[in-house]
Each structure stands twice: as C-alpha cells, then as structure tokens.
Image (tube, rainbow, N blue to C red; front, side, top):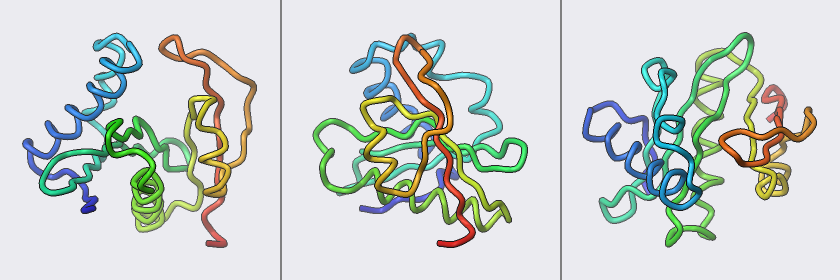
Length: 143
C-alpha cells in the first residue's frame, strides 16, 4: 500500500473516484454534497495497491486543529488496515504543519474504529448527508 499526498490532477482525480464510489454509489450521498468547495482548499490523500486507487481522504486546517475528512476505502480493500494507515499518514501531516489536535466527523458505525486509534467522541449524534455522525477529537502531542 502506497499512501501519498495527491499532487497531480490525475492523483486528485483518483481520490475523487474512490470518494464517489464509496460515498455516492455505496452510501447514496448526493454527488453535489460529496464534492464541495472545500476540495479547493484541502490536502488530498490517495492510496494505491498495485497502481489501483483504493483509499482516499482529505485534510483541512480549521481553527487550531487538522480536520480529517472524506476518509474512505473501497469495499474490496476493507479489513486490511488501510484506513488505519491513512489516518496515521494524515496525523503525521497535521503534526508537520505544527498542529497538535486532530478532529473528524465519524459515521456512527465507525466510532469503535476511531476509538482504537485514540479518538474520543466530543459531540451528540447528528445527521450529515442523511447519515448519523459524531464529532471526535485526538490530542497528537503525546503520540
């Protein structure tokens, strides 16, 4: 698995492809909600296995934290720790930019996954794109 920051338009397009498959096709998020204006200001990540895009995410810096967003793994690649690898890569970039906190909005079915990676629920449940979510936070200082 090779996870990297998407620097070329082809790599960004690969990240968008993975996001569209997972969120739009699989989870029925409207395409206009999945790809939004924040994509212009985000750092995009893409992961490849055998040169095929299989995991993607984006990162923004908001207030005093790195905000992990749009983390997704193609169905056929799940259960291989690729999501965990993506989170670790994103956290390293957050720290490289001088931030010490990571925040994300997790789909409720993924809470345990993020808890295993050190995230704590800090909000009540809310609906985003028709899917139940909670906000989670992790302090990166003591990693």
